[in-house]
Amino acid sequence: MTVRIRLTLLYCGLFAVCGAILVAITYGLVATNLPQSTSKGTVPADFVESCERASADSDPALLSKCKAAYQEGVMTGANTQREAILDRLLWYSLGTLAVVTLLAVVAGWLVAGRVLRPVHRITEAARNASEENLSARLALPGPRDELRELADTFDDMLGRLEASFDSRRRFIANAGHELRTPLTVMRAAVDVVLAKPEPTPAELVGMGRDVRTAVGQAQSLIDALLTLARTDQGGFGQEPVDLATVTEDAIDAGAAESGAARLHAALAPAPTGGDPILLERLAANLIDNALRYNVPDGDVWVSTGVDDTHVVLTVANTGPPIAAGDAGGLFEPFRRLQERTGDGGFGLGLAIVASIAAAHGGSATAGARPGGGLTVIVRLPAQR
Image (cartoon, rainbow, N blue to C red):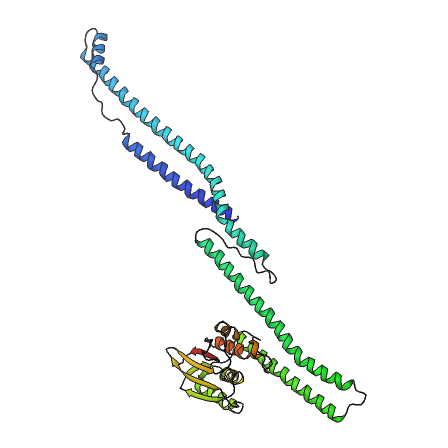
């Protein structure tokens, strides 16, 4: 049976049970207030005179029998009338209950259909939803009841799916574009040399260097994509890690490339748990990002510590001004600000940072510094 039929039967069953209880209570109250006649009562005087006139000799025994017959008749008539009233009440009540129950079946069917109408809308929306069409929303009106909450939850789910699919499509398109660039460079370098009848050794060596540089860029991009895939899937080992130690290693590795930027480190113990290689990659990406997108003679501040139940890694730098609304979007894959194009990066550094932080149960946030530059704060669960 469908849900509508079951709801209809449930409504009618509850109505019939309540109606039967009401009939029983009514019958009991009427029967209680309509008592059965058990007393003989007083014989009217006019009936006694009629009996005396009918009896010529005024026999006392005959007169007593006449009175007794009258009283018995009165009692029998009263009880018969009581039973007739109760029988009629019972049959009329049961008949009315049967008719109203049939009407309740029709009303229950209509009410169940109206109650299930939002469910049909949700079902239709789920049936029509696909990867290519997730823009439809129910926007169910009415009071905020269970069905309204279900419809709102379904709308939120469609919104999240739409955002996820859009992000995936953008990611695939951007990844294809980024991978196409080094391949185009390699093909152009090879075509230019092969187009010459007799390329010189210097031209061949130059072609090899160009191809090697393009291969290195492609390899770096593929490594970054593999890191993103690894962190998104999870499944890495968990072991005690001091975030200050891996950050110090990342600083030592990036010091040689710091150029004119000045590194300021304040590394307090920050015990956490996770994959030390991924956490060092997180710190290295933040420091590389702070060094790469800086101004001449700029500064980079790196600090670690413990805040309540989390360890905190903060990396800030001087740099070009960034709009406050653009800072959070830098965690999206292949997202670059307009002035950050052509810098040799792929726009995956902060995306990898956010992915590693989320995989370790933490979070990464970014904010623009008032004087220019960016402040990135990573919070991870602390391990006591």
